[in-house]
Length: 213
Image 1 (cartoon, helix red, strand yellow):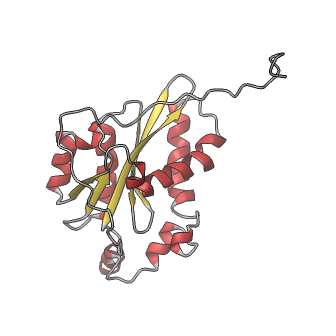
Image 2 (cartoon, one colour):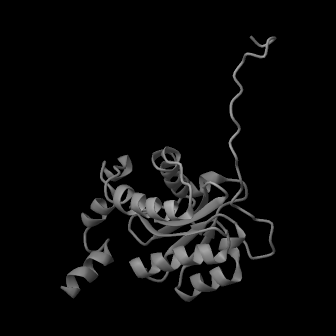
């Protein structure tokens, strides 16, 4: 079959990088290595991935709470720039109102190391943490979320337009991943249910809700 050229050749997938660490911005040390994560808003993890549509790529920036695995901030754009990551960060801050000292962990990409992004983190009192060079395991929580997103949503659909992505991705994150997808690390509960079961000392969002009622 090889001699006659009958062997099926696998179709090559288009692949692009989302991490540009070739910049002059400050690189911060990894603060979450060997850290025991015991509460929400202790560690946030951030990452960027791409989604292919008919004529180009769309970029998705996400922020997860590492304790509950909940996606707390996200943004979509045709451009992979600091505005993309800032929009995801601002959504997460509005959602959680984190205390000062929360660790924000990401890769070394310029979108996270830029002056604008670091200024925003510093203003809200985040500790800034970044993965070691060429080590994706340092951001395993975010990598796991992206793998789930790709296998359970993106690879099952053929998005044609930006509008398709803007409709499907928020639905998957909010209604499927956060509300329904079970995690073995959470006792086979979805992130929202897991957070609702936390004591008030571990869930300041819950405490704020009760106070406001």
